[in-house]
Image (cartoon, rainbow, N blue to C red; front, side, top):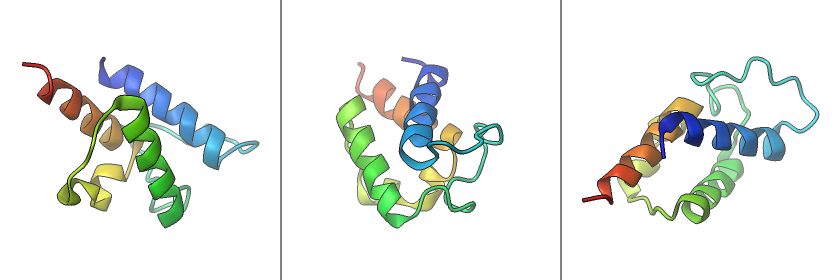
Length: 88
C-alpha cells in the first residue's frame, strides 16, 4: 500500500463524511483539515475510528496529536508508516 492510495481513500472518506455537497477543489494533500474546521474534535474521533478499522492499525497516545492529523498527507504518512512497520 502506498501513500498515494491511502491519501486518495482518506480524501474520499473526508469528502463523503464532512464535505458532502461542498466544493472540494481546495482539498489538497497539505490542506489544513483541523485548522480550516473541516474536521472538529468529534470528526477526528470518527476519522481515527475509520482508520483503525480500514487499515487495521492502532495508535498510541503520542500519535494522536494534531500534527499527525493536520492534513491528508500527514494522515497518509502515519498510516503508511504503520503499514511498513508491521512488515518484517
